[in-house]
Amino acid sequence: MTEKKIRVLVAKPGLDGHDRGAKVVARALRDAGMEVIYTGLRQTPEMIAEAALQEDVDVVGLSILSGAHMALAPRILELLKKNGQDQVRVFIGGIIPDEDLPRLKEMGITGIYGPGASTEDIIKEVRAAVQLRGA
Amino acid sequence: MSLTESVLAGNRLALARLLTQVENDSPEGRRALAELFPHTGRAHLIGITGAPGTGKSSLVNQLALHYRKGTDRKVAIVAVDPSSPFTGGAVLGDRVRMRDLSGDSGIFIRSMAARGSLGGIAKKTAALVQVFDAAGYEIIIIETVGAGQSEVDVARLAHTTVVVEAPGLGDEIQAIKAGILEIADVLVINKADRPGVENTERALRSTLELAHPARRVFRHHGQTMSVSAPAIDSTTWIPPINKTVATEGKGIAAVIASIAKHVEHLRQSGDWAARDRARLESEMETLLREALLDRFFASVQQVKYEETIEKVINRNISPYEAVKYLLNGKQV
Ligand SMILES: Nc1nc2c(ncn2[C@@H]2O[C@H](COP(=O)(O)OP(=O)(O)OP(=O)(O)O)[C@@H](O)[C@H]2O)c(=O)[nH]1
Ligand SMILES: [Mg+2]
Image (cartoon, rainbow over all chains, first blue to last red; front, side, top):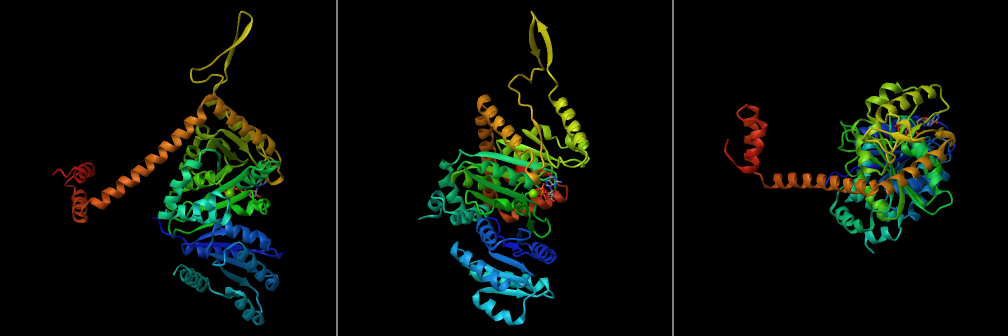
């Protein structure tokens, strides 16, 4: 039996147009031994949920710089749930005002990272979240 | 309902999960493969290969759109990318070019890291393809980056292998070196909007002619007859060359037509069955090899194994003798 790999979908919902941050995180996760499915810019919540299903990922990482996180995050969580993927852990990276953090956590976002976050922290927390689910 | 039953009933989440089990070679995955196998053998497997960045994913995107037009045939895509040999991780980016396929529940895209397989097609690609086949996907497109062995591997797996070239890649050398003609059933020159298409086409044609010398034609009693080298007759398949601009959907119908013609050729010549047979035979052989190795390692004494290796390292015995000793227990 081969080793199970952590599979992560990295997606960029919304209309803002650059994905440098998302790519940095994607590469860091790869270097941590994970399999990262990169979907690119301007993904709708429907596209993200569909890709998460087809790829049977453990984790979805969203890069949101547009400020639309309070609309996008619940929609994506809802679609994942609808597809039977309640177990998928969702992380957000981007520019998120502090006052939104509690509500995002409450709706079920596992981790939230600002522009200054270290990739080591992200890797550590992704691993921990997935192990939790496997246990 | 078992996972297998759900897959056969068309449940996409079950399919996704089973693909993971199969990819990880879990006991559940193995069991499911055995259950599903009688349902396989219906799909047309199309391999798409070529150098990095030639536009394979963009082409797959267009082909899938075309295959879905006006039919209810389901299309599966398996996109294989290399794993990092150092960390075992991978970034799988082929979906970026397949966004047009989103929202169609008759299409299923699965990205796959090559994992242990060197640069090439993943060990479990054939197994994933079997799952899709059993699940009723009639067209299965397998994208792999052309890097030596992977081209050969995908050609072994697929019924029809499409090799994608693009202008400006040092084509002449590439075309010949890669030995693409041995594996290409259909050739595509993508990025036909770019300068240098003519050069690429010329290089491909001349390579093709080397492999398939033009038939000599002469007249006999007023009738045109053609005579050809022994290996070549009217049933010999000569890969057609198609030009496309995948990003704009240009030239796609012609590629689809070439692929359809190739299927017809395979059916008429009996090569369809022959390829099926060769594929399953090689798959069985691979599994047999793995199983024999596993069995050997389960039975050999660790100490004996280590000692034998030491003997080889000290040049007391050759590796060849070591194997003989380990298998037969004969003293050397
Ligand atoms: N000008 C032009 N660009 C194209 C065409 N087809 C693809 N591209 C571009 O070429 C780049 C690579 O396209 P992909 O479809 O990702 O190529 P690929 O062969 O799948 O790449 P890898 O999977 O990384 O090997 C992208 O920027 C595409 O937009 C084309 O017909 N013309
Ligand atoms: Mg690609």
